[in-house]
Image (cartoon, rainbow, N blue to C red; front, side):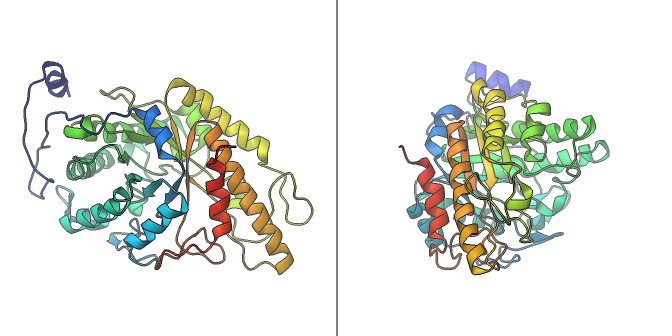
Length: 392
């Protein structure tokens, strides 16, 4: 890092070119810093990103060391789908990605060129639509996501560094429309973390930043996302320490929001209504509008007001289409109200909202589009989300 800093200060042009680390390479190729197409700092870029959508349960699909884009029952992603997402009004696509199942050399963690090329193909579907794109290391069998412990720290950081060096080098020539996010929901359970867990989780964020910056080129100025512990708002406010970054004003924080759990994620139909206008059977009184404002306000005070934009990387409500017709009609109204309120509140608090779509459009799923054709299946939900960004 000291050598890298001297190169920046002296403007010394040193270049070793390579499109990607091969399985027998041990050094990190670097290029001279290149700011072309990278003029926007995080505050400027966050304002450009608009409202986003997740290509969930596709490129991150894996089971152990087995990975495949259709493994979790979604079809192969097409340009027609991304075109439809753009036409619906979304301006950012978060692409959760798995990498571990595509490693061809376990000693160097070399990623198969064919998988890097496939991720690039999907990224390009978005870039061709002038959209912003986020790629990450997402779930990936849990090697990173479930191990914020001292006994796993060195091994996980070694793999984290190796993978991000390759990803960063492969995508180094992309302009600011492409962002990197180091992890996803790193946690050891769902309770308040121990100091050990937070310390190790933050080291994974630092390793990510160091690995990307060391590759030079446009990655010197690339906007990066780092995550709070378990992407949890409370843990972020209470424990988050930003990584050290040699490039100032190029880092955002990511959190997720599925509160209240009973309404957003619980697969039974006990709670299917939310909001001040809904009462009676199926209504929850915890985690209402005032709680949304309180939580997002905490993120604004802790990060946004300090010049660190926040990306709401996931949020949403499962569809409960198995409800009786009368209850289902009310559920749709409450679901759309929630999506509109949370999206609008996120924007009002300086956050970039990115809806979680896992593909399925039926019962207990989050999907908005037919993944095979791109057709808008739940136009009402899409309208609820997109209209939240309209200037009144």
